Length: 181
Image (cartoon, rainbow, N blue to C red; front, side, top):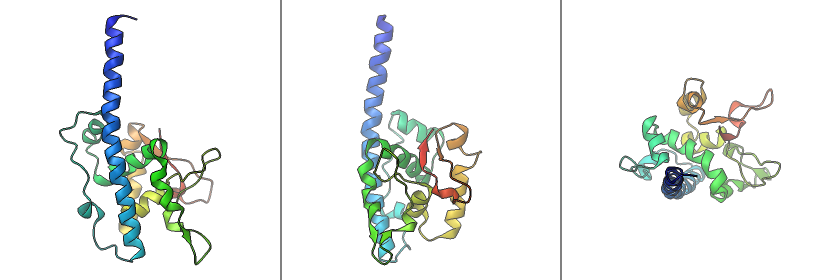
């Protein structure tokens, strides 16, 4: 390995470390968003926009790859949350544990939270339904708009960034797990 190869590896490691710091901060923000959204849900008060109450950190001056991706495709706050949810399940899966809350009325989890568990991973894996709950609540218009994020024309698909996992025939589209491509 030549000195230019070693410099490239060091540079890539440093870029990764920088991205990880930014992602770590955004996961903290995501965790707070989840807590706020669940609080709003149980208080039956979805009138206030979660992004106004808890805005994301401005990444415009950040040079990490994560920030670059968000800026390059001009991702909205909602798209940023979807991207972050698909990453967080791999690096900070405990941020989704709150979704294991039990609906005492039915002695099961809350349908509106979505989510699945894997065969080897017994933690909560967010689905399109989880993203819809977090971003749309009970607002049907917003839920229909969310379909655009998973269309074949969206950068998530075109750039092979993330997708909803395939679902069995007859299962709701949003029941697919948010999956990094």
